[in-house]
Image 1 (cartoon, helix red, strand yellow):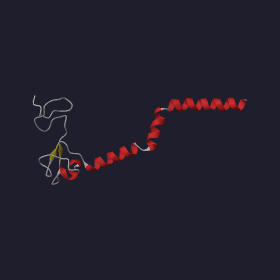
Image 2 (tube, helix red, strand yellow):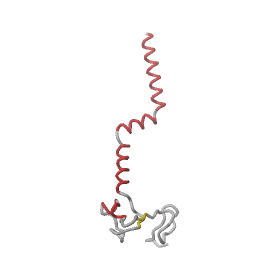
Image 3 (cartoon, helix red, strand yellow):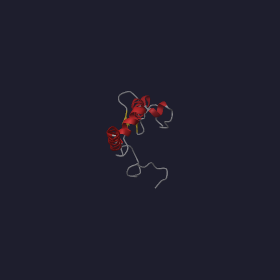
Image 4 (cartoon, helix red, strand yellow):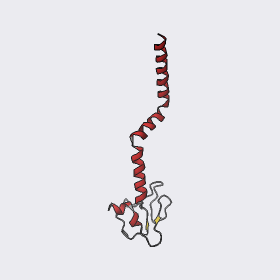
Length: 111
């Protein structure tokens, strides 16, 4: 096997052409080029030979989708989201502590 060959990340088959089931092929619509809305073109990390006039690409990533994803990640990392996640994971512990607190309050009120 050629060490320079591109292989499918799922089945390790050596890729010889476009259309392999493990790798999606993105196609431009009408007269637009994929590069106009691609993240890799915008940050100048694309090394595709047909750049900036690519009509088909396997590495295409839409800029708008990337922005939405990073916004969701930022929201998921906020304090409120982290706290809600912690409470959801530790409901049993919180319930046990609440019961202990109620028992303590009852014991203190009896004495």
